[in-house]
Length: 105
Image 1 (cartoon, rainbow, N blue to C red):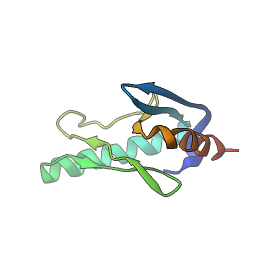
Image 2: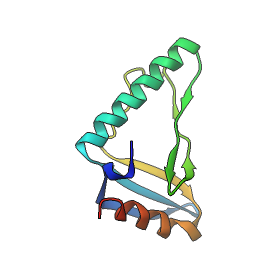
Image 3: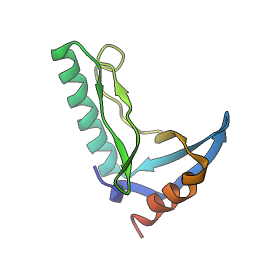
Image 4: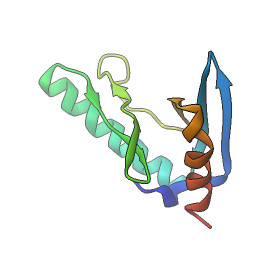
């Protein structure tokens, strides 16, 4: 997946518990790609009997490494309600959000 699959107008930041979170939605193509990715990870996790990770990177920096637990999400995640990058340092949140918004511009 690439940043071109982010719906630029959907990118929002919000503060919670002293950290900043970034919410965003994916295009239909992005949601299909995300579903394929997480389904593949769930199947691989089932094969190896361990949860799998993937990375959310913006501008070459990894901001999150979500976990796909094959026991909890054996059919993958669909991202219909969007994705959240949590615990982004406040000093970087605006830059990351702007980078996500600019990707489609």
